[in-house]
Amino acid sequence: MANRDNNQNVSENIKDKAGAAFHSIHRGLEVTEDAAMNAVDATAEAISNATDNDNRRND
Image (cartoon, rainbow, N blue to C red; front, side, top):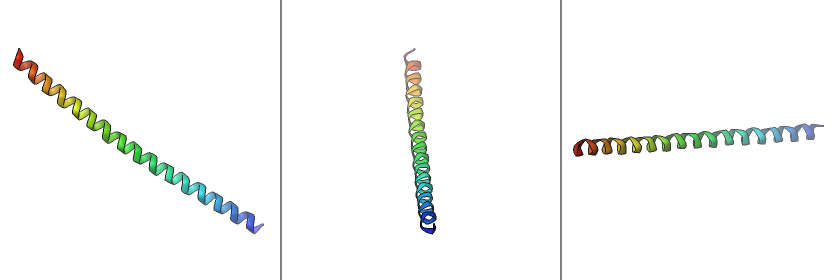
């Protein structure tokens, strides 16, 4: 019985650590995605501003 309990504890520990690792990786991906989208938004805004400024000069 003790061996089965020990195996159950080991299995639960592995499962818990795998779950924690998954959540850490997932959060890292979310942070990376947010940073990438912020860079895209900033680039789009810079292009829009440059285009608007260029259009004003040509009017």
